[in-house]
Image 1: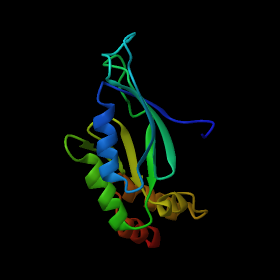
Image 2: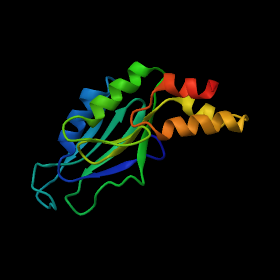
Image 3: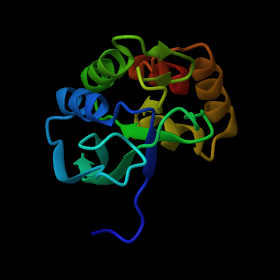
Image 4: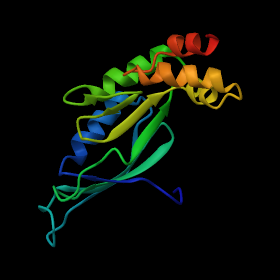
Length: 157
């Protein structure tokens, strides 16, 4: 087990979330699950918690109820090497009630925030040529879904 894991609080839809993420990430695996017992606080037999893994990242999930919601203050960043990969995650993660946003950000149907991006963007934004980096930033700020070709075109001027 990794020393530090993201811990996600779901509104009694942890199983739905795991099923959804399994349909998006081909390497999704469940490490273990626990159900509530007679002592509660959830209904006996209801999935209480689970540890799962997707794209080599481990997560803990809890069916904690409606008390807490996800916010954009925490998001998961997906490094995509190709436009096809960006397109895939952008559409899959925003499906079924998710919300597309700006600059590669979206929320999935559970309210969890994701950034679907490419390492190329970070490299170009950090370029020592500040004019190039500025052009790339301006191009990105016009985007919803990240477009690698447009970013590279902006970098060239």
